[in-house]
Structure formats: C-alpha cells, structure tokens
Amino acid sequence: MKKAMKCSSIRFFIILSILLGSSEIYAQYGYGGGGYGGRGNYGYGRQRSAIPQAQETQKEPEPKTAEQLVDGEMPRISEALALNDFEYAVLSSVLKKYVQERIEAQILKLPPEKMLEVYENITKRQDEELKAGLPLEKYEAFVAMQKEGVAKTLKKSKKKKKEKRKKIKN
Image (tube, rainbow, N blue to C red; front, side, top):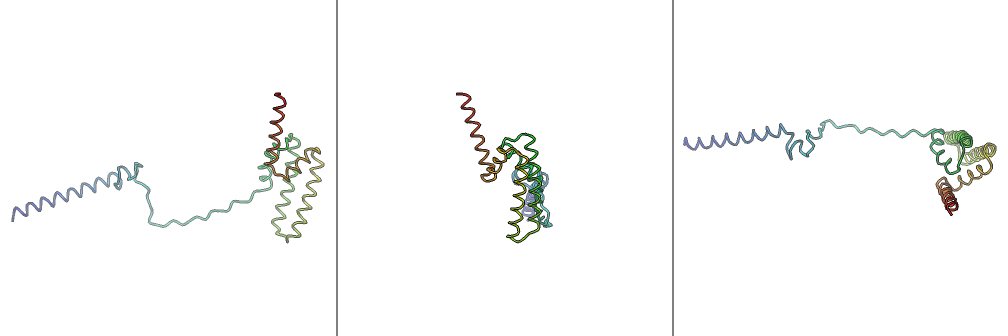
C-alpha cells in the first residue's frame, strides 16, 4: 500500500510539475502557438478589448469649391490648348466665376425648365466673356474641347506634336 501511494504521489508531482512548467512557458513567451507571440510577430499578438467598438460613420467629403474644381482641371486644359500665361489667367478667372454661378444655381434646386434656362444664360455670358478675352483660335479650340472632352483634345495635340517632329527630322 505504501508503495502504491508512493508511486501515485510521485506521478502526481511529475504531472503537476509538467503542467506548471508548461503554463509558465506560455506565460513568458506570449500565449504559445509557434514561438514568440504565436504567429511570428515577436509581441503578444493583437490585444482585443471585450468592449465592442462603435462604428464611426465616415463623413461625406465636402463638395469642392469653384476654385478647386477649376484649379484641378486648368493644367490639363492649358496643355490641351497650349495656353500662354495671360490666356491661362483669363480662362481660369472666367471659368471660376461661371462655375461658381453654376454651383449656386444647383444649390437653389430650381425646377428643370428654370434650371435649363439659368444654365443657358450662364453659358452665353461665359462664351461672350471668353470671346472678348482670348484670341479667336484659342476660343474656338476651347469650344471644340468642351464638345469633345479634354482627353481627346490632349490626344490630338500630342499627335500633332509627333507629326511635327517627324516632319522636322525628315
């Protein structure tokens, strides 16, 4: 009996020391499972809170001002139309003025018929001012660019430049 008790107590201490030793290893090296930090990241892993986090609602981006809109597009327009500094300044100021008017008209949320009338009036005044401020060929190029879009106009101007270079080389 004493021998059986001695064996069982020895087994008990061996099992107890194994259990305590392994838990100490896990405690020192971060939750176990593959070395330091569990997934090879040498820390304690991602700490998670028991408290649920509230989802933050993302704010809608504020609408751009007329200046921001025009300033964003002017480099491409200038490249497409090959504007000098004076023409650039004239076009930029006129566009800012009339883009601002269009934004204000949108804010009013007029009925569609009235909105169309307001836009036509703004476009008419813008065209008159651009005709007066820009050389005729630049004005016509701007009108064509409005119809085709900036991207197509850029492609055409690049194509013309390539053709000129080929002619000069030959």
